[in-house]
Amino acid sequence: MDNWTAANIPDQQRRVAVITGANTGIGFETASALARCGARVVLACRNLDKAKEAAGRIGPDTDVLRLDLASLTSVREAADEFQARYERLDLLINNAGVTGLTGRTRDGFDIQFGVNHLGHYALTGLLLNRMLPVPGSRVVTVSSIGHRFGRIDTEDLRSAGTYAGSKLANLLFTHELNRRLDGSNTVALAAHPGGATTEIFRYSSALFRIPNLVIARLLGRTPAMGALPTLRAATDPTAQGGEYYGPGGLFEVRGYPQRVQASARSRDSGSQQRLWEVSERLTGVVYPV
Ligand SMILES: NC(=O)c1ccc[n+]([C@@H]2O[C@H](COP(=O)([O-])OP(=O)(O)OC[C@H]3O[C@@H](n4cnc5c(N)ncnc54)[C@H](OP(=O)(O)O)[C@@H]3O)[C@@H](O)[C@H]2O)c1
Image 1 (cartoon, rainbow, N blue to C red):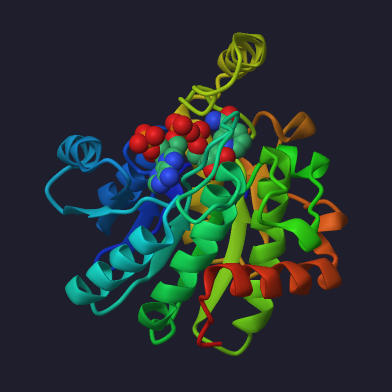
Image 2 (cartoon, rainbow, N blue to C red):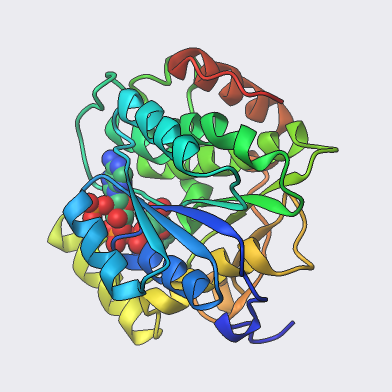
């Protein structure tokens, strides 16, 4: 479909959606659009004050969950808390991300790799038992055009971290998860926003931040436009497991969301399996599929 917009989202009444990093940027716009269509949205954020303020702007049928993806303890607590409050999960949107940040997570992983990939790997595995009984349930993970420049050293995942590598991991994870979910009620897809005028470059140098934001602004990439590929992957009835959605225009940096092709590296099944095994070992989270 050409020019797919939020107006194409089908009715989401009685559906429950968890969106990580939903207090701002693309996550906020994703949560807002799903709420407008009737979903119960759970804003999974590291800062509860910011989350409550964002929930207030979205509307009454919202909930907040404390989730710091830089701490496996926090991820486990968030999953336990969600399961205590909800019987079902229809949509898990793995959206939160950091770039330009150095340092370690609480568990000693590179911060970008830990937040962007390992935290989401753990969260998804711990929430999956609430998704598997739900027909049409989907896990959508937000990657980036930058995944094309990513490399992953599975021998040294603990310390090997670049933003591009973490975004490649988002896609390797999606493909392997979707394979493991084969025959179940749940599918996994990925999306990327192209670019968007969000706070994503807050930790980056001005040299990197300013041109990126200027280009995104010139191309009209508002956070709401940036959220459309995620929303299409999450709700378009024709979307299938394993698919990847991004802006359909030139170089995938502008336009309405369409199915796009992930890099050959992200589609390598050996790399997908190796990343899965190491992620399982590092987080201690074993999936029920
Ligand atoms: N904007 C772009 O141009 C662009 C391009 C390609 C891909 N993406 C991807 O799009 C996704 C959304 O980014 P955005 O552009 O909306 O950026 P953003 O405005 O910076 O939002 C990022 C969100 O992630 C949250 N977050 C950061 N660290 C976290 C942690 N340890 N635990 C839980 N949440 C954490 C942030 O929370 P706080 O507010 O508390 O920090 C915020 O809610 C990311 O995955 C990013 O990689 C964005």
